[in-house]
Image 1 (spheres, rainbow over the protein chains, first blue to last red):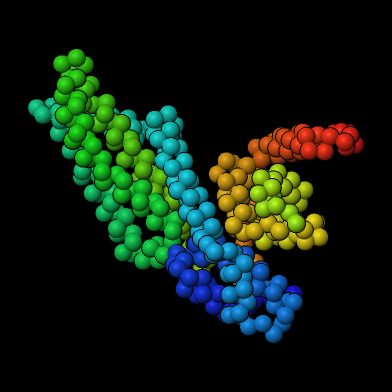
Image 2 (cartoon, rainbow over the protein chains, first blue to last red; image 1 turned 180 degrees about the vertical axis):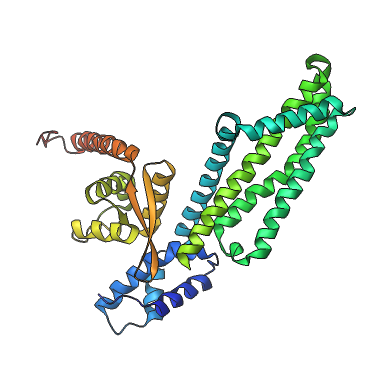
Length: 222
Length: 115
């Protein structure tokens, strides 16, 4: 069977991109199946042009085209990211990263005990999120290729979620104010602030893991 | 002519069995192998196969690895240890349902598990 050469593969990649699948890792999810099908078609009819063969293969995917592959890959990335967040939280609370949690706990408790307004503990999440987000924006600026990968986008979305956490923290500080006479204000503010901090840390650690996987994909595909 | 709904319902045991027999396979290879084994009677569409493969991977029954082959990256699927345990169970379940349906729809036939 005649295999497609590198130029033909690049042409097919371009055609897949023209169908609306602009992320490189999504294109690579699709390309092997399409290339195999084209090779088989051209093996049977060796006069078939690449364009016609591509159109025939695309038609064989049905009315939704390659979207089943794209959707499956995207869902898989989202589920993988979510599992990584849970795994990171587990490591922070019970595993190898527990030292980070202990440092956060000590810092928060110390801050609450000396601050006249313990509600402001939640405001500490703002600068943490800004710093982490800033690091990631720096990563994108340094290597714009990250934006071409769906796996990086999914991770970025997860980190973006952490931007909403300070707002949740402010709401929580009003709620916890009602419990402070019962629990004592130190515990009432410490527990939710600690848990929100662990969540931010888990989202960021999962993001780093996903970025590493994107780096591996980049190395493989290029 | 095979019903698409029936095939879709059987896809999981088919995929698990194939991967257990053949080791690692890629998506296109799975569709072609099924076509070959059934002399073209069973045609698994990409729209049915890939969601199934992704679902099984999310459940931890399959693992994947990428290999550069013929100028492109190829994703191979293989059974995990959990997948191997589940494969036996799924095929047994499928066989049980198949025999019950057979008994219901074709009571005159007296096939059993052992025949």
